Image: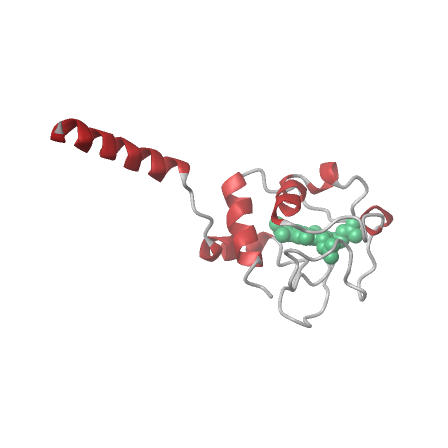
Length: 125
Ligand code: HEC
């Protein structure tokens, strides 16, 4: 009895450890190195090739009034927000998800990279 309980608990622990890959903002900041050439995240920091991303998680699409978005991105203004789910989809393959976007970035194919990055972006507010 004790032995089977022990086995059961070991199994539960093993499943938890593989299934729960907690998003990690510290790792996410490193992923952001790929975005830095074009984006700042500090409040009031200037736009680069892309818009400043301060407070981007939860914000409406194309709401940075100091940035000139592509017609494709502007068309989503007022219709979509950068929820974690939307960011996840967009960052997986920007050009495929927003046809006509001027964000020239291949995308982050790795789900863990996206999760960690979004976790870090959440701290930039
Ligand atoms: C080569 C430059 C470049 C790189 C690299 C880049 N972006 Fe962008 N990003 C842009 C441009 C330009 C836009 C505006 C797109 C448009 O108007 O179609 C944009 C738009 C965005 C938006 C929408 C912002 C808004 O206000 O609606 C998000 C979110 C975003 N980028 C996140 C990222 C993240 C996260 C990365 C890194 C994984 C990244 N970008 C990498 C240039 C870049």
